[in-house]
Length: 356
Image (tube, rainbow, N blue to C red; front, side, top):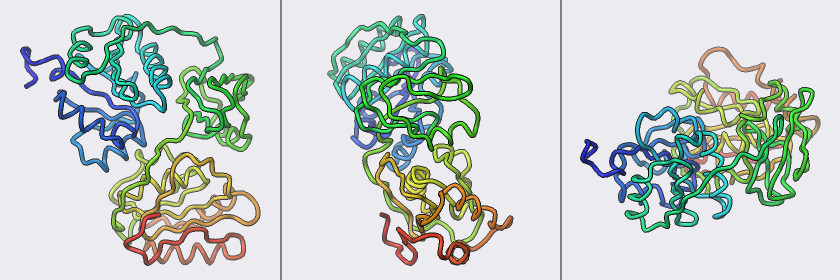
């Protein structure tokens, strides 16, 4: 029931951020209890978790603030932060991006709280709190960032720091401050830089730091679900240090993925595992542990023994045929091409029941 006399929750769009809401069961519980008009999933790894859950949702890989601003009608954000504090900080950031005049209703499941940010929908927030039993809290967002700088708050010391999907360093404090100066990204406070990661990021040009996608920590804490290899022949997709873009490029004609880079291989392997798409990963051993590795049957991961994964991977990509090809045959030829320059660290060929 979504008409004018429906409850506030039944008229609203539920925007779910992050895989944790699905992996924890929060999304399923909230959908059953609240019966929203529709559910939109924001983010790349959230999409993977949502697809694995089988729940009826829509996918939008843009950030929650962009999605919320384009919805004509009531909406609310669902999030499960690493901690209650980081969950609140995330909601504040989204609320500030949406704008104080519009406001945000934010359901934070890590603490059992419904935040009504700024001038958000009071009727909707009250209904959410009533139906979930969560505590209703009124809050105001505050912009603290300076021009040309970016704060990433809610970090835990030792975890990875991302800018536009690439790991650029390791957090040393709860707040990381980055600056864009003379076409380069520089850590101002709270981060040990990863030069190779920053180099990868800047290959695409220095991002607008105020609007870049920034986060810290792992991108999913559970392994992917298993699926049988989807097809043995088709197009081989190349993903070079931009695993978060893979959903924009996968189509039914893809039979496998050549992934270049440790974290890219981890992300591509994880996303492709539940779709039954094998990968051939080229890594050099500098993985940041952003998620548990998982690969579909037919996958192979090699570590370069001399040089960098960038160079070896790009050299291998240049040998890819322009037409559809047999995955197993290409993998054999790829290993022959790389003989003496790599060692195999994962080999799932001939293992239809294994995802690791």
